[in-house]
Amino acid sequence: AFSPRTLTSRVPITALHAKKIAIGVVGPGLVGGELLQQIEATRPLLEQQGLEVVVAAISELKKDSDGKLQPWMICAETSISKSQFADALLDESESSGQPGDFVQMADHLKSCADHAVMFDTTASEIVSNCYSGWLAKGVHVVTPNKKVGSGDVKRYQECRDAMAATGAQWGDETTVGAGLPILRTLRTDLLATGDRIETIEGIFSGTLSYIFNSFEPGMKFSDVIIDAKSKGFTEPDPRDDLSGTDVARKVTILARQCGMDIALEDVPVESLVPEPLRDWNCGEGQVLADAFVEEMAAFDDDKTKLMADADAAGQVLRYVGVVDVANQKVSVELKTYPKTHPFAGTQWADNICAFNTERYDPQPLVVQGPGAGAAVTAAGIYADFLKIAASC
Figure 1 (cartoon, rainbow, N blue to C red):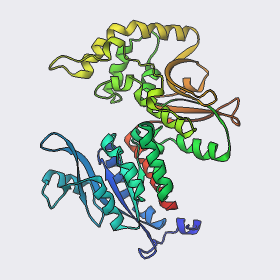
Figure 2 (cartoon, one colour):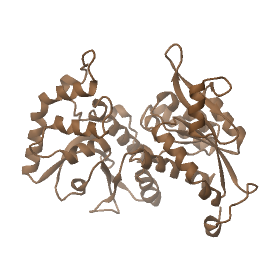
Figure 3 (tube, rainbow, N blue to C red):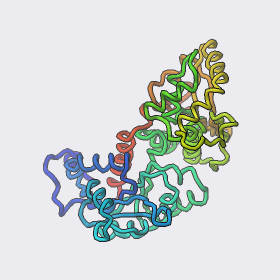
Figure 4 (cartoon, helix red, strand yellow):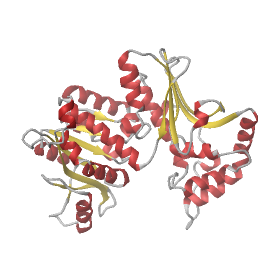
């Protein structure tokens, strides 16, 4: 461990004494690219902490000649920049990069340094399936990808078993609340100190937070979706947001941290997509999002009435996830809250999480702030990495 004087020293620690960590990034897109920029911009700070961080591999999934997604990567013993990877991707010569599997990528990291960390900034099941293998090799994993934390229970347990066997760590803070310290608060400040969780309740979707922060009496729900789409909040298919599945994944992750034996399929979800539109397909030549919103307009009256009734009762509508540990129940639903409630005070695309515990009663412990965005998500991933770097 380094003393406070060492951490704040302006004299760089020599490479002889630095802890060398080789990292690999899968998915150098919006979040992954931001992460690489943050690492590069803070190299002097890393040196002050006695860390030599080498970006030894970058990879992304590309379709091969048969249309199947395959890993495509470049590896090196010295740090690779995002621009170098982009150039290699365009060149596609064998000397620049090569298709390969993620096991080889992890092995390369281990050959470069005593400590290795894989960053997965995708939402891919293909990559998620590699976590247990990486962890079993002693390679740490840091990711905002929710697929393992909320997916197949067997795969989830395999990862936990691998961590126990090798001491490798899994940095998953950004799977719930992006850069907000929601999982850290739950695990470190509450559970690890012996507090007993009663309920966890929160607004865990930045998109749906914005939609219901914007939705007011007299407005059409479809118009609010159009506005959210214009600001870049919605997925290309808005049903991916409105279905509530993303919130259900976060609820599953939180419930498992509380010791609940929960599968994603166990979570009751109130979808905001009308039943007739759940399997609907747009016409040829139409833009899916635009065509969907047009179809949604026919169902505006339902949400308009809900909003009017809530407002008349001095309440607001919020789309929330609930983990009821005391009663071993979970849910994702549209609920009403008094206008004096903390959930009524959210702004823009805030996430907010309220922990009701044995100690925090009757007032909950509340964590609130931006729950989406490349910069805050990348910063949360980076913070997870620094915790691992300090302890490995």
